[in-house]
Length: 437
Image (cartoon, rainbow, N blue to C red; front, side):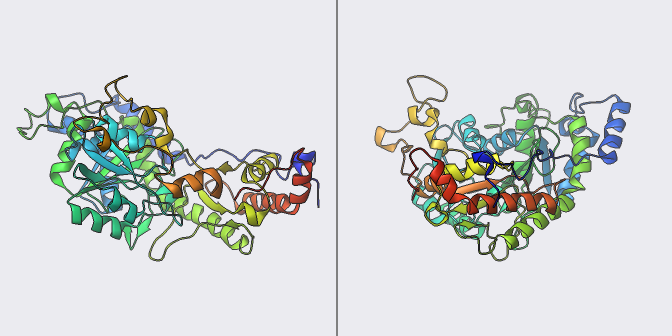
């Protein structure tokens, strides 16, 4: 056994993993077409066609409609703005509650606050990390207006059960599908299973426009309301002869023609890019069989996983190393991995102090409610999430283009080297850390 890099030996991998880059001649041709037209945003002129955006924006939207089998796709400048527009479209009012997971990018819950609603955190289940339908039902109150599941790491949530909960209580369902473009739940794409679904086209996503997002819906009324929020709705409703104006106060959430030009080409590559991720993930899963204490991700029956990340369950008792020491040793071998994911969102100061818009009045958390009705943001409200964050989850970020199975061999070799050297690692500690439970 070679000496561990953390103890002075040579690392398994000495070169960094290359950054993602799926751009080519297709994106360049579309960008040249936009630049030659002289129109970088098609939203400028008056009239309904300009209200809907320029040529490339509408071409991208049509592509999403065709690819995902929906009536409407609305391009926006980020997944965050898309979530806010979706919440505004369903009519979130001050103090309304929206149930969200705590294990997600902060924008999922922050979008609720931007709509003057109140995030209520329900726990996640521990196999595929989506919202736990049973805990969602426990968290519903008379103020609940919507449920916002997140298809975390690229695996679909338990949507049949969440849809059933939503129907029983008359709630809207908005999918945050930022990490799951192309994932299927019982034959249907994520992002098409609720009232609205929102995708991200951020730089680190499977397909990207740098920044950007797309909102999907089959509801004509919701689509128009999202378009109004995207594009200064307060000055457009009269021209559109639209009377249902609450919640249509608009922002500038518009996508540029340059971004859309890149998106058109990227969308055509989605299936190939997902297939590449799935191939690398399948290779890792097969090679990890029998690796004690480290469990590869699972895929539920009738679902497809698109592996935005490669999440692994970590059992420190079985491995014989504290998670933090394992992660440190892997990083030293040239294979950086994550210890957990983000901290549970309710640990952010904004939630602990009930301060979003003001210092003392607690809006919207305390709006029109007694102290005992204020949502609980203390530790312990989502024990599954806390356990994953603190000790039970590790993340590998590199199942993506342009990496190869050879790169995955380095990941596996580093894992095996660290596991083989665990005794030396523990012995090297001045005060050997107790193995976390």
